[in-house]
Amino acid sequence: MEKIINQTHNKETYLFALSRLFERASYYGIRALLVLYLVDKSGMNMSRSDANSIYGWVVGFLVLAKIIGGILGDLVIGNKNSIIIGGLLQAIGAFCLSIVPSSIGVYTGLTFIIIGGGLYSPNMIANFGKLYSNKTKLLDAGFTIFLSAVSIGALIGPLILGRIGEFYRYEYGIAGAGLLMLFSIIFPFFYMEKESNISANINTNIKINNRLKRIVTFLFFVAIYWTVYKISKIGAMEIGMKLSAEKIIDISNNSWLMFEPIFLFAFGIFMAIIWTFYYSNRFIKLLIGFMFGTLSFSILFLIPETITKVSLIYYLISLLFLGISETYIVPIILSVLTKYSNPKYLAIIISLAFIPTQLFSIIFHSFDDKFYHNPMFALKFGTIIFLILTIGLLGYMIKYRKYYLQ
Image (cartoon, rainbow, N blue to C red; front, side):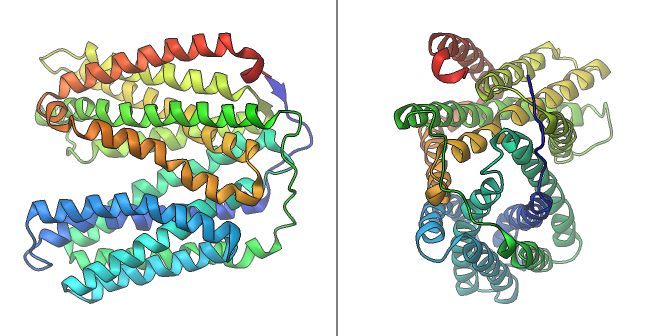
């Protein structure tokens, strides 16, 4: 590890992280309520299949919207304006959903949310990365702080807005999401205009083809990671439901979802502190992330058919290791994109980075029935793939160490 000297985080680091926290709380709150609102008799009274179809289209169109948003942010209206306009559009979309109880309100609201999310996300990530244009060794720590805020937003959004929707009306929860979205744009509105001129210099010591090779390699492994992660989680959630059913601990099925972001936040802050003072190679971090991902799902096979209190310990250790795995992988890909891309086109590059993950997800989506009907097969499949990728990643790193261990 290399000690980092005379480099510190800007105050904008924490302000942008707070902005992203509230934006993600709003987004995940809407995601948690959307299908429930669409199928509810007092809401839209749709069929479950129609509601799920709309939900799927929203997620799919968001990928395309981010590409368009990245292009507009980098080449037309600027990153800051894209963030503010994107936040406003998402807020308007949430209010349309909650105030206009009709198909027109639903489709209009979702259109605003999709367009707004496409403008906000890639430009916020790009602008955050540009804060570290002259101190790239702090990128890992910075993005770990950023993504720790995301994990808290993903936790409190469904928790708070979901409770509002459950105990009052779904429309109230969605309206609350609109208010959170408005709150999120306060921080960039006042502070991003103070940002200094971004240096157009990128790492000229590394040839462009080697920079491209690093970006493509990291994108490939991260896309595989998220795809296998989703598959393996099918089996992991099945075990969580068994623990709930056996009443080993008095907790609902959905409450198990709280532990992962809590572990992710706690370990993320811990590593952000370490990475603020010490830098280590990003490719090694990627390898460590895959190793802990493999360990996380492997531990679940130690849980016997007959659930005991020890089973709970194994399950919590698995969730902890999964949080460690994400901490070593998710911030790193954003750091790599920021460091080796031209900052003038960073939002575009970040928006395109969503495509490989989406493509892999589409490919494996055709096998969903097999995985959902046999959750333990999904867990075994994912664990084996993780293990193979860990070994392959180690071999790849050794073979091309001159590119990745500099």
